[in-house]
Image 1 (spheres, rainbow over the protein chains, first blue to last red):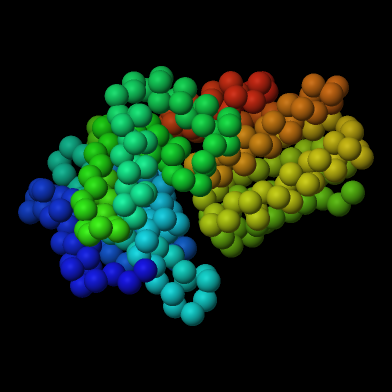
Image 2 (cartoon, chains in turn red, orange):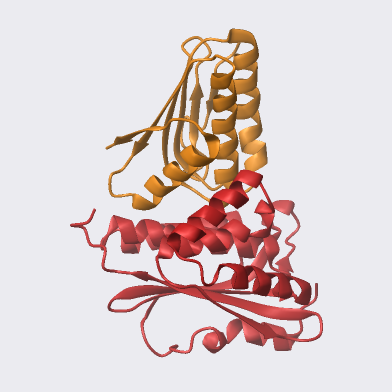
Length: 195
Length: 127
């Protein structure tokens, strides 16, 4: 897919996905190809920074980051081809910000309008489920092996891991594409005494 | 039957260490699992287990020390548990121990879910 300059601007202008852009300390801010090497580098940065606070927090941030990064890598419509399949990965944005009481994880990438509709539908199915219902639904999907590669379980897992609501937004870009944003928080209330 | 060893030197942190021993039936899966192509990684594990079950037919002591797996890998881990459960139903002796850091409540839930879906008894050992 060819992304217009207008679309690239949307990717960079993360005010669309972060209304509190002026607050919080930025731990990670990345926009680009989410290949395996990039994923490894960002993972290390997350762990090095957050291990000091709490292993639980660190593991949650790492787990959520992996899900959203691999989702971008596999399904973003905007892709980099740098000559080898190894570097063929989706392009997207990941921001992790630190506040007094929590970390906020924000991710965004371009999707087709069809995928945007599917995401909306999936999200509507799970938005009001409580934890046990989410787990039950996850067991069902995983047990069936259903649509694993479509990110269904990933969304459930992000909610279960964060213990916080998931927010999604689908911003139309044109007749074919939309910008898919998701965000959630990880509380810092887990300290080393919990570890 | 050959033993199966993968990632002994831990050169790739996204791939777990695998030590499947055909003589003792001791199988170890340890580390983190969030590799790019899970099917490529797990296929030889399925093949090894199915061959062991078909040809060796001795007991299996499966030791899991996974500290993280992504949702793609979780489907493949479940498939391993299903292979073990099928062997148990067919009369094979299977024991599965899952070593768990006691702080890791998310992993504890995953293990409970695996046990429910696979029907296999999973002995959780807190470390």
